[in-house]
Image (tube, rainbow, N blue to C red; front, side):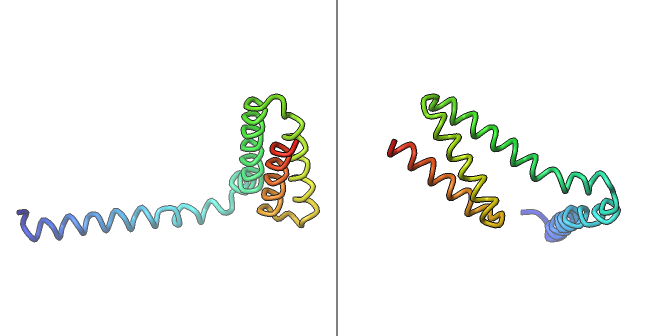
Length: 108
């Protein structure tokens, strides 16, 4: 059994490392807020990530069901239209596009 002082020291070192790792991002964040590069990343990165995700999903669906390419295009168009008409509510547009795709695959 380790000595009590050793256990207290181990817990203290772990606590200091944990606090330092949690505080480090906030300490680094303050100078980065004024950076034009970080501002540009904050503006373009979410759209870029969503675009890449959409391309990968659409490519996989087209590869899995090449005879249903039209269903993918119709569901994508429904998603875009609902997103623009529905005041850019992502959950609503994704749900509408998914429902449209499922209906087209099962009924047609």
